[in-house]
Image 1: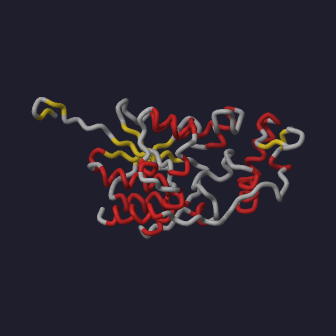
Image 2: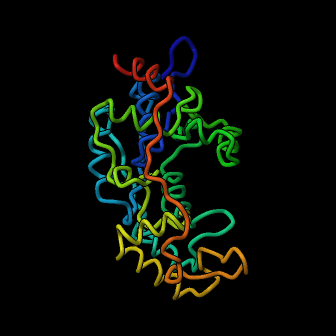
Length: 258
């Protein structure tokens, strides 16, 4: 479309919605700042996510007043554990291979070269290398711009009358997959209590791949050990939810009229 000799083609605002509180608030803020016709919301489905994430997605879709496009990998059956089996590792120097195969590659395939990408990185994460890299290439982080923390996002979702995903209500910090390899010892001990079948399946994958795939090391000897050998009292996993900051109330007021 042309008007006044200038192209009226709008750059798409692509919101990466992960079924987490932070990405939900980031998406809501972008919908308040931009025309809905300019905003695209992508979600990558993963088999091992908690089923309640789909309920949360539907609730957020209603809150947004905007459709969420759910994308799904076909090469690995959208299964993180199938990625580990076929790539023969659970976590490496660059992170977990499932994130790349099931999220980034799937969403990238649906994107256009000039899309503006929006992630739900919070103020707590602003100094992390991956966040700095994302910002350095022009990515948008509305939560960082507004100094919103992870706790602020939880509070904003609850104030909107939306039930948080089950994973949060169980005391996990993120609404990611069950038995995510990025979790620590305390996290896996919690998973062993709450999701024993998932814990055993991941432990079996570790075992089938061998010691090089083991997630944890003995702090004294440096020797890797399997999930089956994880001491039941190892690690910490706090269930205490931090309180919102005053920025939470400011943004809540901002969104009330939207």
